[in-house]
Length: 160
Image (cartoon, rainbow, N blue to C red; front, top):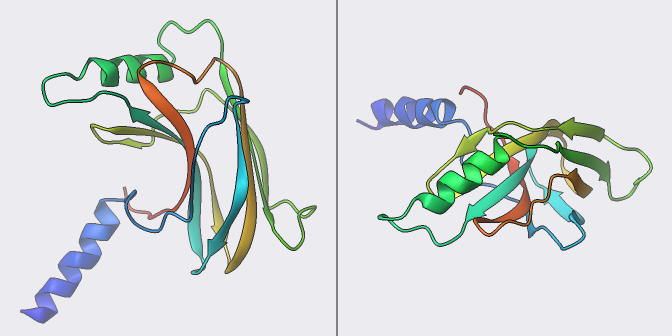
């Protein structure tokens, strides 16, 4: 029985790519200046993603209206202004050596649940160590009544 359980568990983690409850070394709510920065620790060499996280406000089983509003707003339906994210990642001990420095225009949804929508901004292979992350947004406002915006760095799994 044990021999059969291990492949099923491994296969499950490959099929269900992003698990947002696992290995989240950094998670912050977006400030009023539309910027998030801080440090995080990587304990295992693997791929990590930096994502915009939109936590839906006031969601109940009977009321999915705010989730639909958040989805519509973020998915760029009828938007007059682009959503622009600038992301930098660097080792804490050598902040001038940027591992990632990208500008993302109108990111797309990468995963979601009833309560949270995610838009992956960048994915990078990181080795053990401490990193600085900075994400700033411009263009379309992320301060909306239907969701609370934030940034999350999390371990990323392949196999979606």
